[in-house]
Image 1 (cartoon, rainbow, N blue to C red):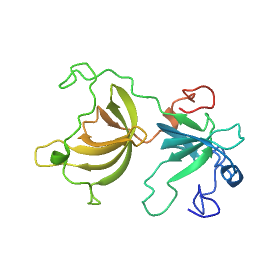
Image 2: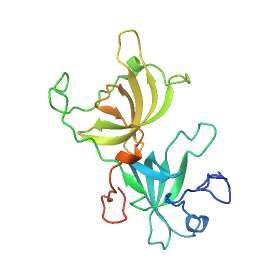
Image 3: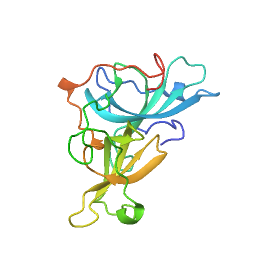
Image 4: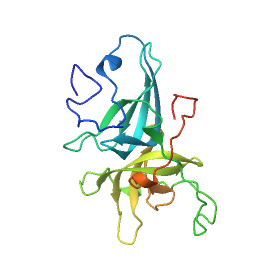
Length: 213
């Protein structure tokens, strides 16, 4: 972070043709009231000449502006080296939402053809917060909560004991919810890195053209 450019890192890799455009300093430092909408959504963003999986976390309407600026992260900000996030001018062709899972619920236990929320593990059974670097991770995922799919971030994985299932610490709901859940790969479904040849088509915001996803 710099004092002159509070929304960006001091340096960025040179953009490739067709990359999403970073929000210019002049736009992000306009005086006056700005509108922020905090809404998480898994997206693909065009960076470095390829599609990169990311998490859109904030929409911003700068003062007097007719455009939306969005905050997208694609790596752990605490990890050394390289960019991890940025503010970008929203363009639905260069920043597009990933489609939510649409397949049927598994026929096996415990679903029996009906979707259930991810199973939350009680804190006393999950153990203390992750401190071992081997447990920590940064992985984007779809998580089933309150009967719907939510954009989520997995920050740690562990196995509480021999013979017990893997569990993962996930954050979702615009970072209002966090818990250890069973890492079954179904109700908590990590998203694979995008394949440029098989990427979905452009999406549209939920609240009308140019609004938050």
